[in-house]
View: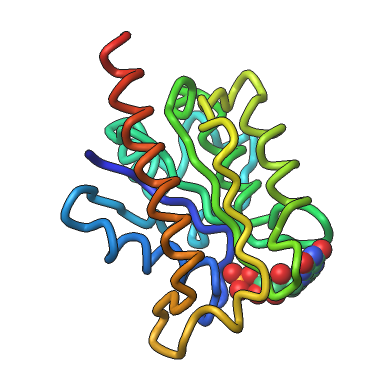
Length: 183
Ligand code: FNR
């Protein structure tokens, strides 16, 4: 099963990138998770959408060929980051490759609430007609106090959190399989 991941932070030591990379490694025997380089996308501009740069086309193709999308979102000012919104805006247009794609959301922050507000907004955005992912209900993964849970090598050392993410990932995979049978 092929999953593409969008990580809403482009900083070098991003906890959300570490979380996505941890998941990529942890589930590699059953899932191929590819982290998309959305931080390299140009600013969305409606003037360019019919003739965008190669990176837009490359990422669009990867989303089109995936079985699902994993979003790893930071919380910026009680919402998602510009990097993530920019990517969602690009791929909500022209071919609308996210429509009907299964999606799941995780998010990490140093605060206790672990991106609750960002994820509420993200669920709303994903429900916009041009985006249209079918987002896994429930299964909300808020990794708060993340600086106490990830070590310097990027390992999620908090066993309880890791096991919870295991269970959500299992739910996501079974849910995708069930939906594919229906289609
Ligand atoms: C933040 N941060 C933050 N944290 C939070 O819990 N609620 C918030 O509203 C915000 N707002 C916010 C705005 C901006 C502009 C920045 C740069 C940061 C802190 C943020 O969660 C923290 O920097 C995370 O580590 C960002 O995620 P990455 O980059 O580690 O993945």
